[in-house]
Length: 164
Image: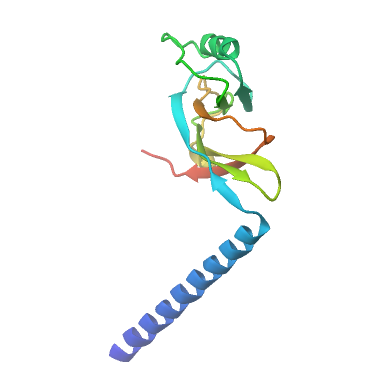
């Protein structure tokens, strides 16, 4: 019995080492594709009801656009003061979606591809607990340093188990 436990422990340790090595190797390949630098951002607002029914992203570059967005989302506060000469505002919307949450996970300048990449996480409930209709339309709005790089995004979809 003791031998089996020792053998199982050795096998488990070997598997962990192999997985760790593969993860390190894949990150080296990814890093070799392009050099990137994380772009700091500040959350201005996040909510569950925006009135925006489609999955869209917007880049705002003026106070007029920010004021219009504040009206669209039904914010009762005044929009924050943003210096649009040095900053931009990014708004991401999940659309009308049952129990989905949306958040910006990372913004990075990918020098090798000449783009600013925004990673947007959409967290959805697993199929068995999702409701068909929803009045939710989650969103997040952030400010970040302005950049001449064109913006692109990647959606990262994650699922959560049902909560009883």
